[in-house]
Length: 369
Image (cartoon, rainbow, N blue to C red; front, side, top):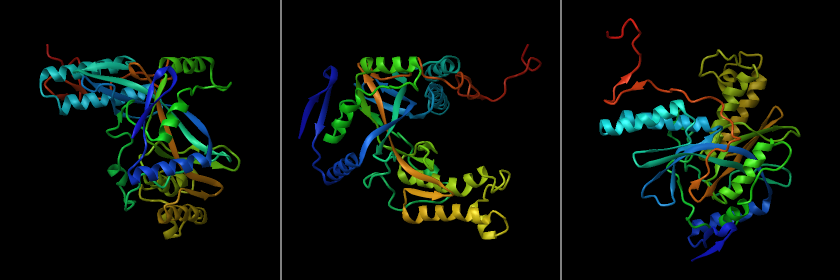
């Protein structure tokens, strides 16, 4: 069953009433979350790259995850994607030449959109936000969020985990459940306000509501957030695809990173030295402090917890959302007020049209005469 609701500027939203048991449970879960949480906290923009083939209609596919803090990081991701495609996948010199031409542009220009071999690539801009309750606490994972049947805590498990936005298709015409549709419609008017934002940022945000009047919601992602005392929550990690990935990241931070940051374990210690190994050896004067970190990590692993506290710092698994503003020509790209942390540059050795990698350029003395 479906029906169309028309929002601002006549952009339709297709609503599909959940009928399958799993869909119905997820909708009930979302309703409970809506009742618990009273506001949204907007963190700011994230950037990635989406592609559109000539037969994709209005759909775009994420090819560089939308998790990067500035547009140039996303461009660098596209640079690497196209370079390795030229190296490993090109079937002819002509195809490789087209890919390498795009790489050359990305090495020298702030290119936010280019077309390569009939595929459009665009740097896209998303807003990251999270639901908060009446106490200002950030939403934790929901019971229906994806979890592995058997959590993997082994070394290297992160490399085997799903990547954020892997094979994600962005489709503005996809049907939504009633609560998803309500969220999408309510966020169409989202714009920055307040004196903490520079005037150019506020103006760009206002213009985006007109130029890209629709929004497309992306799947939830998960991260560590931290607070001490009455301080606000601050991010403690990047986005992860599942709550378990964020918990595993937190367990590592508690036993390896935090002890080094606090001077409880020397930075130059061997990589396999952590709070557990030092406590087991009982040779450090910091054993008591390290034991608190080790015990918190053990609780996290044993109970599939979403929050632990150690030495006055609360670490929580937060549930983050992202939205892409969408206009007549697809997802929004970077805004003039968005800041790049570095300039375009060459990221890989020179690759020629025959697929040969040149790791070292010849010096003047070695160059053929």
